[in-house]
Amino acid sequence: MSQLIAQSIVSGVLLGGVYGLVALGLALSFGVLRVLNVAHGELLMLGGYLAFFAFREWGLDPFVSLPLVFVVMFGFGVLLYLCLFRFVTRTETHTRIKNSLLVSFGLALVLQALAVRFFTADERTISTAYSSEAFTIWSIRVPMVRLAGLVVAIVAAFVLEWVLHRTRFGKALRATSEDWTRAALTGIDVRRIYQIAFAVSAALAAIAGSMVSLGYSVSPSIGLGWTLKALIVVVLAGLGSMRGIVVAGVALGLVESLSSVWIGGQYREVTALVLFLIVLSFRPLGFFGRAAGA
Amino acid sequence: MRERAAWMGLLLLGAMVAVGLSVGNQHFLTLTIQTMILATLATSWNILGGFAGQISLGHSAFFGLGALITRELWLGGQAFPLAVMTAVIVTALAAFVVGIPMLRFRDIYFAIGTLALGVAVYITAGNLWPGISSLPAEVLRSYDFTGPYFFALGALVAAVCVSVWLERSRLGLGMMTVREDEEAAKATGVDVFSHKLAAFVISAAVATLAGSAFAYFSVSYYPNFAFSVIWTFEAVLVVFIGGIGTLAGPLLGSIFFILGRDLMPTDVDEFQVVFFGLLFIVVVLLFPGGLSQAAGRLLGRAGERSTATDRPTAARGRS
Image 1 (cartoon, chains in turn green, purple):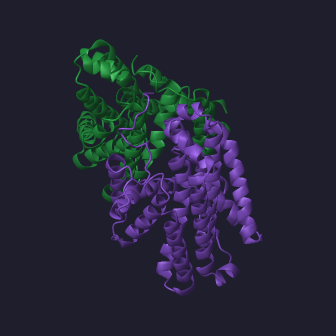
Image 2 (tube, rainbow over the protein chains, first blue to last red; image 1 turned 90 degrees about the vertical axis):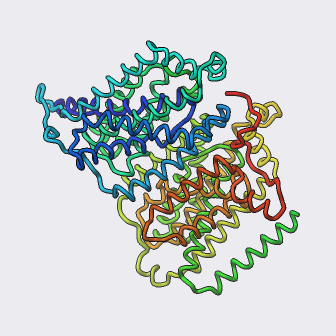
Image 3 (cartoon, rainbow over the protein chains, first blue to last red; image 1 turned 45 degrees about the vertical axis):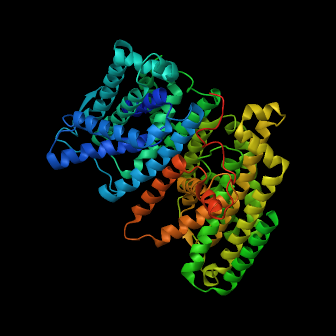
């Protein structure tokens, strides 16, 4: 039993790292643009497919294709911002959040349907030569490809924090998220900040998708589930710090995997959702007031 | 004007009854029943989302609960009307109990919270009722569309009547005040929370009727399918495309949606979703009034009610 629990703690932590990684992007777009993108999970799905096809068609290792996935989905993010979210951000905060929810909900439906059309509904996994490799500590298996997800999440969080706090651009980003009107008055190009923040958010979702298709699997319908995970993590952690988001992701992964040991695997999602509702009811006005990286 | 609308409604109802009694075309009846079920569900969502301004993404839970209870009791030997009544009462009670914590969440948190609830209920229903639910052979032998048709019609009429009543009643006006501005509502003596709760419970009860109609109409389905988020999504889609906050919006939207889906090429299923998804985005961004506003303009009745939630220019305090 203790063996089983130890093993599920490890898998929970590894999966939780990916939860954190997905949530980073969501927190960025929400914190800076005040746009709630419920199509975030669909962006993850697209990233996952991109990595999968890069591997199958061109034999690109998912770690080699990581920058490619980042750049392509960054571009896609710019496109989405220019075509859709630009119009949403023209309204004031209250309307903005509601409209962004609705617009991204429509977007999620469209992206999912297109994915079924072009990628088929099959589940896909990248199986590399090292996919089955794992190292064992005290008879606990740690699969390499899943460990990579956690590592990428931690690296991404530290890079983001560094950019936010140590660069001029990060300063402008934080200023915009605190008060965009005053940021605009100090000469910050708010539109450009919005565009880049949204694009990075999309690219982060896609990176997470790469890790998901390497360590787990992707299919067109996974979007909503991942969006919910990211939302739960952001509610748990707040928008305060990027490191905090990864920690909260790991915590969620832990709770899920332990609940599947104790309550039963078919209720692991339900446990997480109920936990989410409980946490949310302790802060009914929530986490959105605070600024990203503040 | 009101009188004319009432006459038109009665005329339409008469036509619907005549159609139900005389038309034998199975395909046509199927489409009409589907439209009426969706229109009932959309109207119920509109009570909460359109009148009271609370965007719920967990509406499928009530639809599913209605379908589940009705079906289980009915196939378990209860008289069908009794099964429906039980379903409505149980679901309304459930909505009351769930609504108290859920409605403490405002705006977006309410949307996320209800979505989480809806997904949790969907998974749980799938775990508890994994087997397919089929009509037994003796029911199937006497099955025809007349019963479901008239029940769905009745459910839709009930939903519209509730909406009409709300549009004119003090309770409904209170809900709209809450939608426009909670602080101002409070200041004028409207009890914000109980109006939200009333909208939540009424909306759930009406959604139950749609679920019952689905349970009565469907020959076989997996019980958790009625809990699927798809139902929420379709209701939201239809309400926005038709025109949120209006009486005609959910009806127009449903007709447009079912008819459009039927007319589109069937070899590429995904095309329909893409079309309606894009249309939805366009409506949210550019035409907050939806089809009913467009229709109103065509009929020369400009200025039908639209909600302030989606007017970018709406004066509102920054939150």
